[in-house]
Length: 104
Image 1 (cartoon, rainbow, N blue to C red):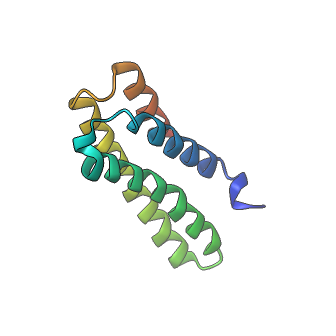
Image 2: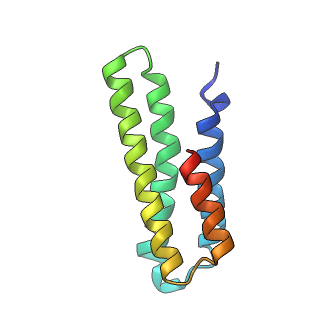
């Protein structure tokens, strides 16, 4: 099995790409703060999940990486909350992104 076959990988990659696209519409003054942070954390979920998969034969390392993945996913949710509260995401888009984030 390849890591790209993992459902969590597919969903986290899709979420990161959705966030990338929607964050293109964020105000320019957010470029080096909110936009950068939400993109980094959402991408990190996918990357760290892949690292966990590669370390799956080492239970302690595997669990540690999965814990890091969950932390990055939680950070992404906080940035989604900020994006919504700042008015950069409408109700529908916020619900869609949050739902996918919860699934991951």
